[in-house]
Amino acid sequence: MSTSLSDVAPSSTEFLAAVAARQLAGKRRVFAGVGLPTLAVDLARRTLDPDVELVYESGICGAQPEGLAEGIADSVLVSGAAAVLSMPALFSYVLQRGHVDVGFLGAAQIDRWGSLNTSFIGDWDRPTVRLPGAGGAAEIMPNAGECIVVLRRHDPGALPAELDFCTSPSPVRAHEEDPRMVPPGHGVSTVITPMAVLRRPEKLGELEISEVHPGLTVDDVRAATGWEIAVAEDVRETARPTVEEVRLLREEIDTVRLYLR
View 1 (cartoon, rainbow, N blue to C red):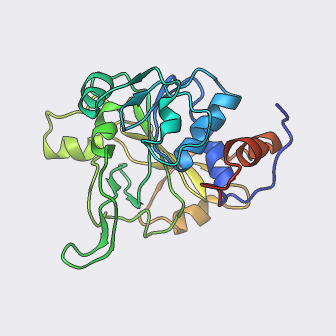
View 2 (spheres, rainbow, N blue to C red; view 1 turned 180 degrees about the vertical axis):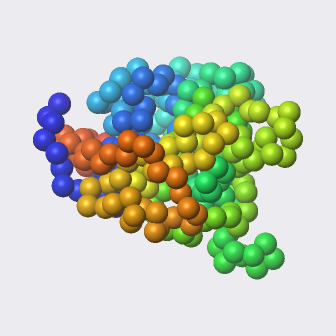
């Protein structure tokens, strides 16, 4: 694959999808949602490992889609899949048994510990925005080996000091509620935003700045974060997507611009 670098903006879907795809190096089974995770997993299969297994919340395991899925129950996911399970079977026998390496999650808000809000923004009684809710994220968070979150915004509203509502608690929050409770999964390990890559090295630790996107500084990222975010000792600049990665996303993966913006 060509190693020439693209000049797409760090806020672009192509940039975010390429950075997200790289996180799947060495991973086997991925619990993916539609949207940007779909792009990232498809790109990873074409550039890193064609044997990455896709699992979808609708019960589809080992998906081999020939086209871009428009939803988790799209028929394109069923054709060629290794198995189609009931949702109870998927969550109990596949996810809760520890057979998922990575869960790809989205969120409206994430806090320093990696807890997610996908329920509402604003006051409980009079929310400003109502969101879709948990879906399977509350189960994926504690049971997948690790979780990757991709945010399309990086500001104090998306990364606040305190969530408006905690939909999917991190292992830290679960442990605080009951010290005997330490979920098997790591929780959120990586957060990819239009400004940076944040990582949470310790299972009961907090997020820190690991990579800063081209054209930005650590101070820029800290100023756009709602808490005094920690900084890793070896912060580096995020590697740009290659020209070939961008071409694959535009010309082979999402030719109709369903998810690319």
